[in-house]
Image (cartoon, rainbow, N blue to C red; front, side, top):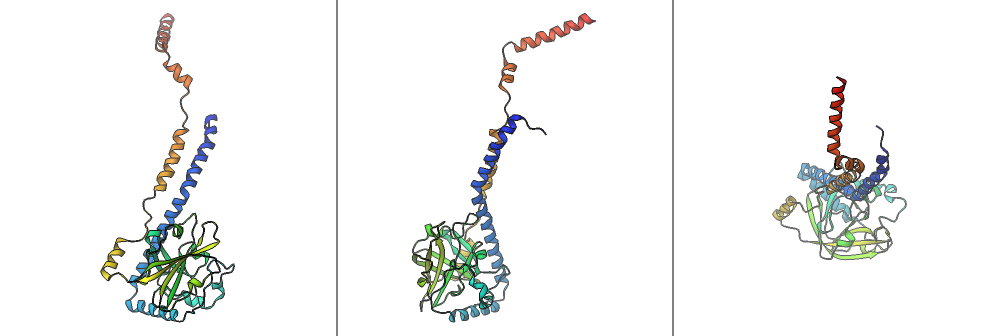
Length: 313
């Protein structure tokens, strides 16, 4: 089909509008799909845990507690500072990944921080492939099962265009906030008691403190600059009564994907570009068709045609 000259002129502008709308909705669309994927991973993890016999879960937790008891008391490395991932060079890392490995997907637990928009699966290690799809547990810190004399470090990216992850942590975290960590069906509650911004090599705040039960969340800050590290530490508080905890899980304290409003914007933008640039009837044709006397002229022409026919006969 051959395009008219007017259509050819309008086509580049239509393409620009569609591309502009697509760029504006990309972040929302990508985050929507990422949230759906996170929820699917968590759902699969919950199913895997529920199918485990209780004695198997207890045995896994016992191994994790034994691992934590052997943790060193010294400072930890910065999870973002290494050009070469030390996990690949550590033979013990393979044994570590087998702990709390209840699901085939590799999920070891769940981090929920409702006021910061976080409901994410926790994975072993802090490789970039892990941090780009969820929360990484810092190898060398306590496993996130709680207990006195433990300090678990959980980290994720912020500022990614295709997933929110820890992006809202710098702006929305406050002292007194409560977040939870769920591992093998057991939920531990933590209340934020310290928020620090430090340089990458300042890791003293990640040390184990005898008698304390800490979880620290880490992400790079400022977003886009990544010159410092934001440390959000939570201290263990009393667990909810079992029945209340079950009601909370049923109600769902996590983040859902919700309605994909980005589809409305995308379809609306494309539709608007089509409507705005639809070819309109030529004005001279409209004027000619509606001009005064046009109907009379048509009648005269019709009459003349009939008279000519009579003369021919």
